[in-house]
Image (cartoon, rainbow, N blue to C red; front, side):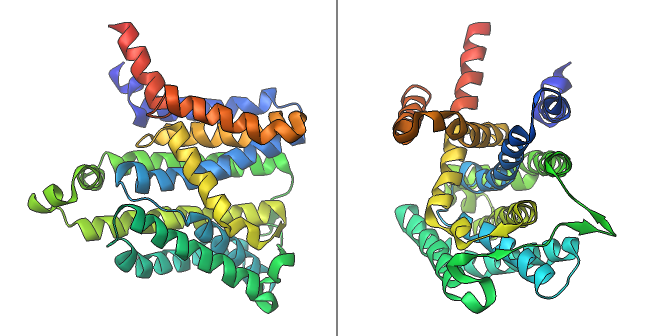
Length: 314
């Protein structure tokens, strides 16, 4: 019984059940599209929460990695005829290598200096994607071929729902195992105090670099899948405001909470769709909802609600 209540078993099982049963209540392709976007955002946010929530390292430039993954798949498949899966893997590996090179100088920064450093990184990536019109299509964007694996083509919202849902499930499982491993304990020690972590033998630079690379790779995978699903991409996917959206999803759902990342991604992806009927007041109401959550549930939705339930059960 205790095992079923643990995140690695009960939480993962609950997520699998939700993914399996959700199509039964989705009435049309519009809702499937929203569910797919939730899953793609959640994949990125799970990786970003490992960096921000567990390691305590802020990043305001992860949309840059998302955009690089999208353009890597678009270019390799559309311009060079690569297989889709190979393009996704190579794109993720290239983004991981770039993140590794950037991590050492950037992660030496602390606090708002680190935020500014990652912000600058994301802005540079966005500018490059906009300016290299001959390669990326510039502000007009570029088409992306359909996702094909050994002759099979992923087509339609329902097919993509299962692809994204399965990827999210695997990503969540990997993240849960990571945070319960010695690496996860080292990340939590770094978040608590880097000096204390160094004193007890934690190689802080190594672990910060590792989690930065992991989060960048997951963002790249999410970007590649988004590119193939949407069939068209523009540099706006790598813009600063997209990075802010990812961070907001993590903070709203709950930092240092893998399932909180998924909840935050779901809320901030679904809520604007329902608020669209308010037209000019959509942003105002969305901001008010987020402010209310942060005021009354400062730890984020999922950790705050879990703490409230524990108190009531005592």
